[in-house]
Image 1 (cartoon, rainbow, N blue to C red):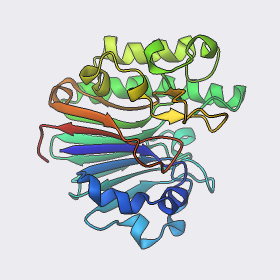
Image 2: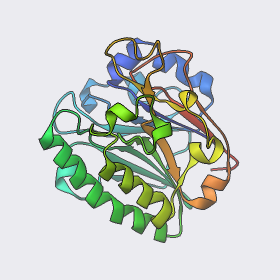
Image 3: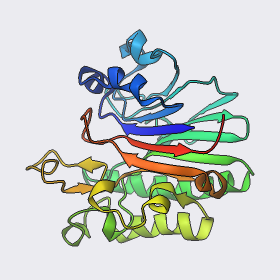
Image 4: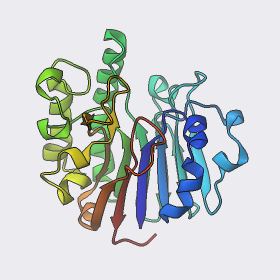
Amino acid sequence: MRIITLNLNGIRSATSKGMLEWLPQQKADIVCLQELKAQLPDLTPEMRVPAGFHGYFHVAEKKGYSGVGIYSRHQPDNLIEGMGIAEIDAEGRYLQADFGQLSIISLYLPSGSSGEERQAAKFRFLDYFAPHMEELKKAGREVVLCGDWNIAHKEIDLKNWKSNQKNSGFLPEERSWMTRIFDEIGWVDVYRRLHPEATGDAYTWWSNRGQAYAKNVGWRLDYQIATPGIAAAAKSAVVYRDQRFSDHAPLTVDYDYSL
């Protein structure tokens, strides 16, 4: 089973850069999308249902903002849009597809980089989401949470960690939250399990300022975080850099698991 996660920074923009032509070449079973920046009427038939896939979306109420989606070759048994929390669901940040005993979630955590108000919203999200992850873990299902977490967990996960210690995405509180998810609640960072020492090859996001991409001054913000059983089945994980559809790069993980 191959799962890809990709923050599109606008599905229409990514499509104009060849994302839909790239998609069938990847032979993915499931593709989790974040930051659609579109409402359902904005999506062309090809964006809604690419050839060979079913398409599912949870969009934000605000136009041109946020939103998540899942493309799947198999029709899910159940679909859950949102978390039942008005503030989060209005922004289209959570979509869960269940396939037998496996759940795949496309997730887009808030960014706090635009100011104190959004950082406060990010912290509220984290406060809501840790208990949710505890419940998911206890449910006895295998789960893969794919998405843009907007947090670089450790110093190894971004190029300029020293100068970013007071910036959103690398704040001590955010990093501690992720450590709790892994070390206390028991989730697994799939990429890090396979590549414990990787630095530059692990980055999935680059600022549009300066020559960050050309110089690979990046951050690892996009993760596949899984329950231990399915995480142990992960055989390979790679960040795709041959083409650019967004300021993020796709993260592809192959699992020895059949839907």
